[in-house]
Length: 395
Image (cartoon, rainbow, N blue to C red; front, side, top):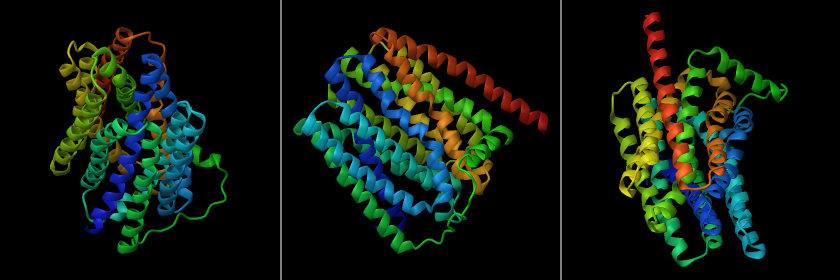
């Protein structure tokens, strides 16, 4: 395996393990409770810690070397999976699944922010959009196999054992990263020591968000996208296996199909010359359209089409967002500012799960999806029009 392949392989293995956990939580909760509302609550518990922790992990990225942070994240996620599975076997209940998923989510965010901070320096001379798309492809390949691997494991072993198996994947990801680092020996500057108070980085981050042109708008757009994505992810397991009466295997195949569609989209982006602003507008519009389809679909096939639009073009919009952050945020403040921005961008996802928790059944859940998708479509269109007019006036 080439040197670049080792790096992308490490990202793939980590994402594969993370996706297995993301697959198990809503499915197991719905199977044990039979409630779409509880599925939403589980999604809220699973995702909220990920995004609340973003400012903290961003500050750590600006203060500590990124490579050790990534490796610590891999090892601690493996430990959390082992402890969670042992606790579930010894005591019983699904609370262990929720707790270990929340812990692993925070650690995943730490590794992601650390990777984002050093990514342009690891592949000098390459187009930024190409690098971002390549890492997204590695992530999405993990997402392709994650649901299928998880569904296959659930056919032969209990979910507690499936969680324990993910620990090995996190450890493999850690070893691949270690081998890549030893082969490449990248030269990176360690963050400069600082004695400033911990709240100062947050002030700096919010200052950039308020003053740097374009950052506030990206947060506004991301909130709309993540509300649509959040209600979709929080309800998919219940709607597919409940309202549409499909099997766990079909649910897993649907998630895998979403990842395949995303890989195809990202592969096209890596070779495309489409302006990044048009990428953002196209991705946003198709996500909102997908939300409308999932809300109104009378047949599983039409629901699947809407789902594929939401999860597939979410990554196109993510490339747009990541490209803007790399260009707009000062390098020395990238970690702290990205941490705060991603928290603000994504708090709408656990909010979506909480909203789903108030629904009583599939009909109410689908009405909620429709309302959010239409609101996102209208507000996003107005926002992109405002950006175009501002750019025209500036010209």
